Figure (cartoon, rainbow, N blue to C red):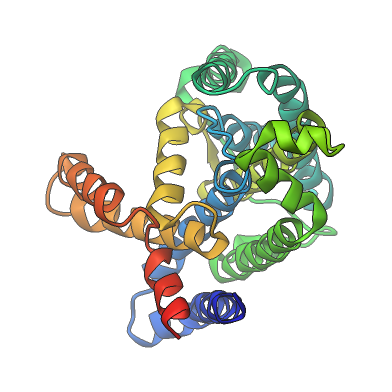
Length: 316
């Protein structure tokens, strides 16, 4: 176990270092577009981390997780539409809005289990999607263009792509640290215990429903942060951010990287978006190629990309 934890921390540190030096490497080789691509990858890595908290550690298969991203993005977009640009207000507002939605929908969804939980989270996600599509004052189906990025204490620091990149990197590092603290805490062990044997955890005095609801809200707020960052990155907000297909993409990222592994969720986001970018360069039907690859990973590497690191740690 000690070797495993050491390996996970080493991989985590290595990933953060790679992200930190990437802008300099990209500039040296005149590949400036990589900074923009990597910013998007890190934003989705935050979203994948948030989903892994409830899926990988709590076995809560949410098919509406993208709704939290969309709500966070729309909070920033609508605020900008009303001339509120201060990031110290809009980003916490995005997290709060996503957290409130998670609290209300989670309080209902978590009274079900299994396929019923999957279907009700899907229903809530689609409800958010169609609500955003009906907001004609904020673009409706066409989405909402944001004419600028969030400011901090009146300074437009994020207008520079490199500054936005390092801000996203800082958010990813903080989310990673926070998630690791949650997973390693007594609360995290209770969530894992509920995943393994709900009846036993109830018998020894823990309330599975309450613990799962708190985890669900934390995951929603983290995804809301990802949505706020995505709105700033794209300078555009669309109902498509909330679609069930986007929730499916997040689940694929977590499965691809390895459920129940925080760095695996980040690896999954990197691998998924990198494959999407590479395969899309060959054909617009890239999912036809990606689908069989995912099936092979599920069949022969159930631990995802994180499995190789875990196996080496055990052998060591």
